Image (cartoon, rainbow, N blue to C red; front, top):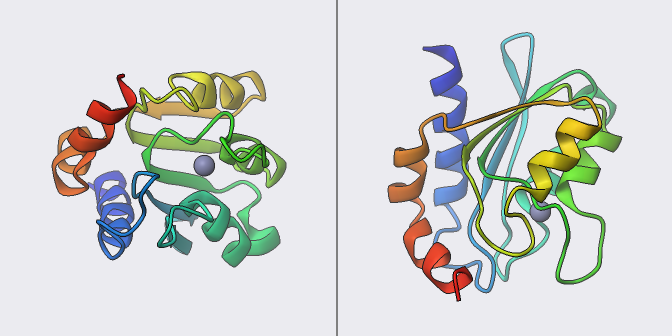
Length: 147
Ligand SMILES: [Zn+2]
C-alpha cells in the first residue's frame, strides 16, 4: 500500500539518527505530492532542528498542497520557544498530515494535531504506529515524558 510505503520511508529517514537526538525523540518526516517524495528529514543529532522543519526547508514552496508523513505527532509548542512544527506545516500550506504515533510529551500530547486540525489540515494518526514505536525506540521517550 502506497501510504505505508511513505510512512516506512519516514521511519527509515529517522533511523539514521536513532540514539543521537537526546533530549528529543528521533522523528522522520517525508513530504509527498502527486505520489512523489519531495523531501525528507530527520531530527538532527542533538535534537534540533526537528524533522518537519528540515523537510519543509528542503521542499521549499513545493510543499504547498503536499501530504506530510511523520513518525511522531508534530510538536504544538517548543521547549525552546521557537515556532512549532505544527505551525510550520500550516505556514507551508501542507494539506494533510499522516502521523504514526501520538506524542504524550507536554510539548505535543494532542496540541500539535489540534493546531493542525484547527487550521484546516486533515490529520490522521496510527499508520504503522507499531513499526514506528518499535523501530524508533519510542518506548524510552514515552516513559521519560510520562513523569
Ligand atoms: Zn517539532
